[in-house]
Length: 336
Image (cartoon, rainbow, N blue to C red; front, side):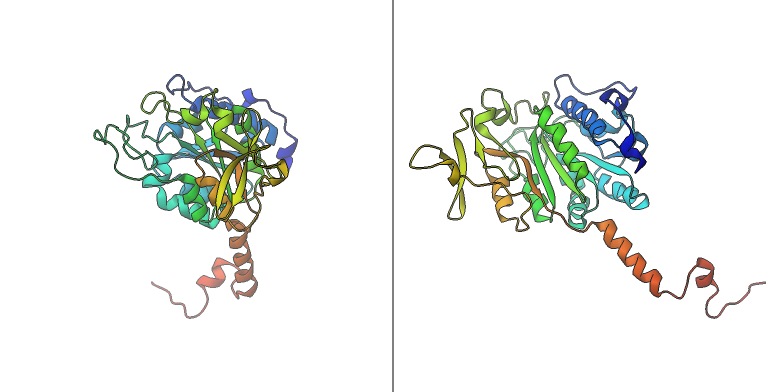
């Protein structure tokens, strides 16, 4: 495609709009990571579309020098699906938040993943409703005091990763909001994946839920509390790179290399491509360490390919070649 020969830098994707997020918000990191990723992908700006719903994250299309649409609360997946089906050559991105995607937009979200539409989805998860000033969201933790739960939230939270894999997601990745280098690379790999790619960003809200992920994202704990997985590599983490994951029975267990006879050969090798999602679900559910990186990336037929194949078969066996053939078939009559 012609777009692959275009050379850009990140400034080419910066729009002329003033960025209106709170100072210190991780949204700025996500925006810059995207503006750095797109030149590496090499697609023409005219072939890129950002579709958002409603929320702080959904201002994103204004700040990208590409096509875009700030759409309806929770309905970005439906609109993005229509855009992709109308013009399959476009690179279509869905920008959404934890409330937009998993509350009012929950149905659209899971069916987009189930259908495997060739879309790239960035889920900003700050475990709060930020734009509407601090109500609990579907990912807020039990006991969290918010504007809409002054005595503590009593609703167990959704796990975006568990929900996605349960809906049949072929590509799921997770990244901390203060990891711009890794985030940029994930955006590149997500766009190159054929099918629905979902990246959940664990993103801090400095105003209404400050420090929601500090237990795993602060610089002094990040290496010891996060495991960044890479396909084909052992699941090793920690400042000393001496912690690892093994499978013990039906559970994952953290071990220390060099203790109790444990060697690097005992550590699980990450396979993002295995069809059976059991181990991927276990990685998603693991709380220590929190697993980041590409957890699942399984090739499958896309929704557009299925639609195209059905259309070919229908056309091949249809006696009607044009709309006029259909309109004037069978008995007709004139109204005078």
